[in-house]
Image (cartoon, rainbow, N blue to C red):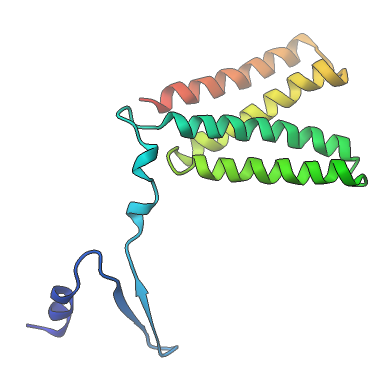
Length: 156
């Protein structure tokens, strides 16, 4: 039996495999962690967990708050709004990354940015007096249609 075959027989699938880094003289252990990427508790019979979508929705709301915080902070020249902006931005990104445990990257990112863009535009119209031109409303509706479409199609 060759030395490689003996080593393969010695290690099971979950046993770390030693890898010799010849140039550095160090021994490190590699382990297959692909099973850790998508925790089973986030999976449902349907495929994608509702919890991931809830986290993604909350992340989108934090994204809207982040955009308003940037406006409120006046270019980070005001302390409290600046801290609010940083906190909501970090919260949004953390929740997005948690939702990526169960959702496809492209879908999750598009939905996250869509919620942020459409929500910010709608609240800008309602609270800040931004233009409510019919074509602008139509474009916001297209963004929302895309977000809803991605959600519906990802379930299949």
